[in-house]
Length: 192
Image 1 (spheres, one colour):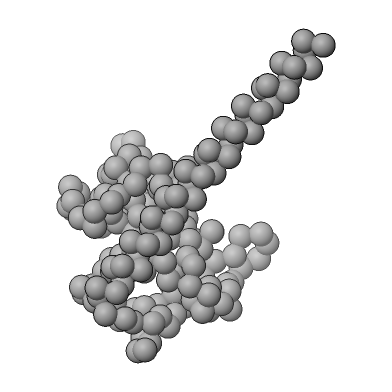
Image 2 (tube, rainbow, N blue to C red; image 1 turned 135 degrees about the horizontal axis):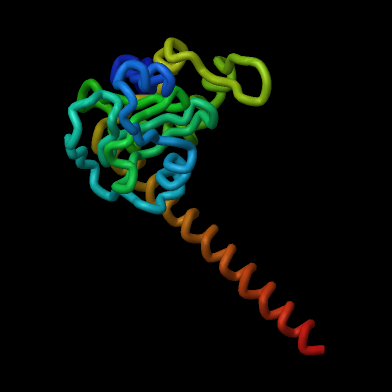
């Protein structure tokens, strides 16, 4: 199996500093992509099934449905859902632009989030002080990934996306069962 550096397939676009953005764009209200937005996308609360990017905005930092975003603090990637279209990336996030049709978006997300070899490479590159460690963009580009035929990438990416979707639903069901059980037990105790 062939292995190559990620930077051969993608370009990393860092988010903007909100204080600089306000000076640069004036006092206009900017809707930022934040941690809550990332959680919604990562937990597949608004799943993008098709791999179609809709170029609604020309700004490089504005997000479109299907764009791939990395949370710099969590070191996880996800696909942007409908509810976050048009939001602007802050410094806490990095947008991934796919330069060629040689790397599937969902396959990239699988590699970045779950593939053990890539996770080890990311851990070696972590930098910073305190609880939040980050990987420099330069180091992200140097990560070596396995390259399989595009059709196989699409299958792997689809399986990974479906697995995440199923995990999200199972977590919601587990929460509901726990709430239901607790309410029945509490009602039983009140009745005695």
